[in-house]
Amino acid sequence: MATTLQHYAASVYGTEEAADCRLRFYVSQAHTEQEQSGQADPGAGSSGTATAAQLQQPSRTFVGEPLPAHSLILRGTSLRLRALLSRWTDEDDQPRSGGSLPELHVLLDAAEDLGPASEVVRFCYTGQLTELDFHALLLVQRQASYLQVCSRSICKLIAASLVPCGPWRLPSSAKCTHRAYVCIEFVMFGRRLPLC
Image (cartoon, rainbow, N blue to C red; front, side, top):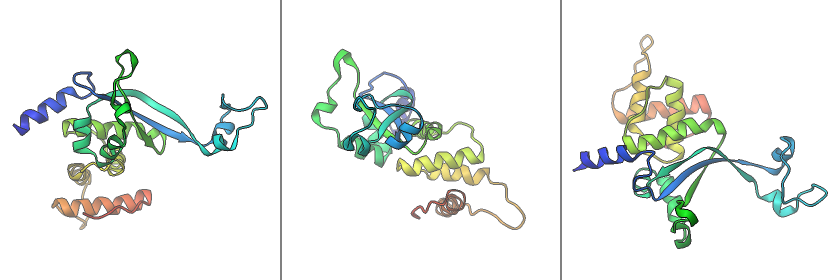
């Protein structure tokens, strides 16, 4: 039965079939960044200056296209997406006018994170990753950590892509592989991740 559910989840990835929401990624842009990039706030006064409330609220710049999603799959595979979904109110769960689906907005650090984040969502549905080089795998693992997706299989792929150099060998157990990834993540990105 588990295999049947896995096949079904993989078959509905990116499709409208049984979708009950849309997943949209965005980056946050502070007001000072908006001014520097020449984006005027349409809500600003006639003089072009923003109010204090507008200065405190960064704008959302959506990246990529909305992805048809299935809350049951997202809740079961990502703790961060589960938390976002649990914050929806009953009104948010209702279909929008014209039959459009409610959108789940997920913050990214930068627009460049869209590819790796999308790959993590695909992984949530299919349990597989596309062919990626070592650096791309690290970026995917970084997004998997951010979205709180159990990613031991991603860690195994990272370990498998490492070529042993001299006497240094990467341990084969999943726990040790995860520890190796945590060390690599700290060295490359300066992020401290919890050991599991």
